[in-house]
Length: 410
Image (cartoon, rainbow, N blue to C red):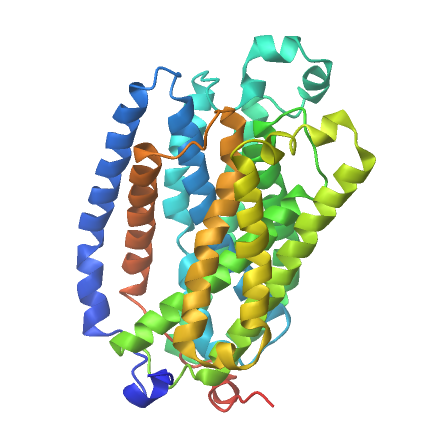
């Protein structure tokens, strides 16, 4: 059935019994995810590569799930800074995904703790011998060193957690008080929050992803990671909204019109991702400087050529064509299918950023990757379920709710 509204009650936006029941299963889901990570670790010990494969795969999955919450936080900030009314009833899902930052901070521990303990399996710049052999790394040492790396990581995670916590708690408080002053408060802080968000996402992308190839640099890399994150965040938001409506947790508060606008945002940021990806590649290709081309050379050889082409078609050309028309954005199941498609290719994009650093002769994908996808995914979903189980799935008391309910695309 194309129109989800026809199967729902007029209003179901309260803390449902189903949501509370799901919340009780969250600890079991998290324990299952932890078990999968532990098994992946012991499998990694058998690879005799000082756990390099395990840590690279773990970073891939962490960066992917982190990007989904960063995309949700970006969506919330954009809606408040623009004082958007149409998105009020669709905003809570993004607030919940952003509020999952404490879980992501915990999931970052298997990355930062080994670095603090002296492991060189993930980041080459942590190896003193590698630094001594490279004049460029010696020059970067005041920035790429373990203590400063740890401080920046803590600051980034703390900034995201504080921003997500502020907007989530203020929105929940508005459910109770229905005070328009709270909306003004969130809008007032959105501008400075976006500046903090932009700086911290750039720092994190450089530190956790770009420094895997420490002699390489790109001033657009932080924006590249963000462009994928906002695509992933909106895609996840569409999927969750569709799932909740199918279960009857959300009714007519989210309509075809909201799906249409979410589809337009998804379409726009797909183009934005393609623009940033092309800009980075074109400038490096044109300049042809060895320090810059070294990152692309392994990605244009061997099995990675297929991944590059898959991203070109799967992350840009096909979704561009599929979402270009009006109709697909107004059929929830079709839009949800495209959202799922883009989530898969967003994961492939993050995989493309991290895994070539291993310099394997074949595509590095196996049981460790499957276990870590399931493990981190289970813990991430458990965090979302725990947060969602105690709140209404649609904001209550927002002064623009009537505008959102009456919203129509012309």
